[in-house]
Amino acid sequence: MTQASRALDYLWSVAPGGATNSLIAQRLGIRSHQTVYVLTQQLLRQGLIRAEQDGRAWTFYALEALDTALANRSPSAALRAESNALGRLTPSAFDGLARQVMSNRYGVTLEPGS
Image 1 (cartoon, one colour):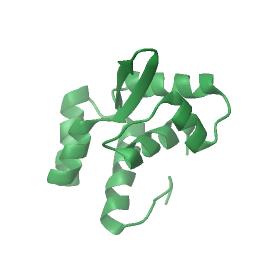
Image 2: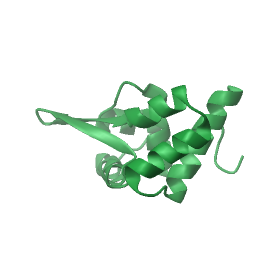
Image 3: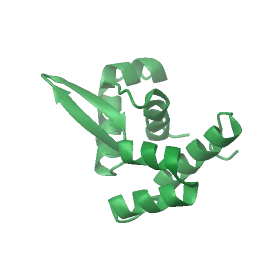
């Protein structure tokens, strides 16, 4: 599992709440704040998370649209919703979304490749 996937999974686990880079680093055991900054910027560019700034602190959130889609629709509808929002679904986004949907359905945490 990549660190970006782990960060995204963590944000999904605290949704609808969010987390700062410092909290993400702490929870994932990543020593470098810069590494987490690069991860969150990558996820922002991919359209997989959103961010809000409060003073100097940034808080990152899993996308509410995906959360709503997962809660109220079938997995295929959720995938179509993200595809429409982003223009296309990246392989890593599909992997993360599929893992989240199946984890929720079966009540277990699925790791990549499982």
